[in-house]
Image 1 (tube, rainbow, N blue to C red):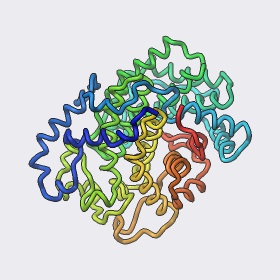
Image 2 (cartoon, rainbow, N blue to C red):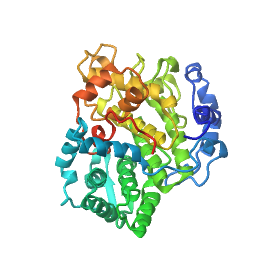
Image 3 (cartoon, rainbow, N blue to C red):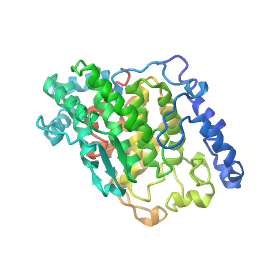
Image 4 (spheres, rainbow, N blue to C red):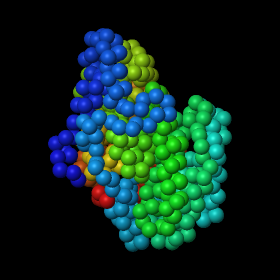
Length: 434
């Protein structure tokens, strides 16, 4: 870990605040945001180079780069070398829950050595993947590549490595664009998983040819990164997933500028997605989204007016989309931790409360009348392992509801989008650094 990283943990937030990227609830409540928004947004755009559809940051200000790793650790997206070593040792020893998790993964269709990729030049995804022209194929192929990379890491059987390589090569030879209304989210989901597989294969001696690696890098840089790097004005789970993809791609590409840009946007969006009572009477907002007044912000929060620790911007929409955002937050924080860039001091408290709050209701706690009109739509999904391991096992926080839900769901599998096999990779895993 870089010297002084903990001392500088809040530096990027300070930079973002100075650039007008963070809005205090005091400013919202007093009605002053509207008066300053034009200036704040203009400065904020300068702090996030490349703003605009399809643009990729070329350079970011020195102060934004100050707390970004100077070199990247590999493999270092979602799982580190030490974490992979731990998983392999536990599985080979037949220890639980890792052996059950591994067996469950290997029994899935994603682990079949006869798995066939279905690449497309253009993936078209409308709202809720309608139309679905390659959307499911792309997401599932990325998960399959990652599944085979994990199988290779555990077994050392080169057939799994070659299958993962063949899937990634198939897409890098063909894919050129994502289109229609869900293109940013689709790109984010697939773009979050591809680097996980690629990092394992590239840095564990799997025999991926240099020319094929180069082509895969070009795919990530030209097809995926421009679609996600500048975020979204949509629901928080969109932008958080987009920043997960951007961070993972940046690590694989050794691109500090893209990493810094995504990191900055992530640290602005997390407080606008998960509420803490210290935020005040109105949830945080994101500049430039057109949600500046209390009424506009509460409408975005599905008119949930009673605020408690851990409430999410999408809680009253449904727990499924909330779970997507929680998963992306934990994934970004974990990748950053592997890189020696500890973001848990900045996002961990929000993540911990969000996990506990939603786990309680997912487990059957009666929904009070003040929450979402007394009714919530459950379905949090297999999204608790990474955050629970980081915050409870590594940092020592008591997380009773999250622990009970996590252990009851083991082995957690995949949501067939961008979450996969996290009991195997993160359950009680004490390691993080590569």
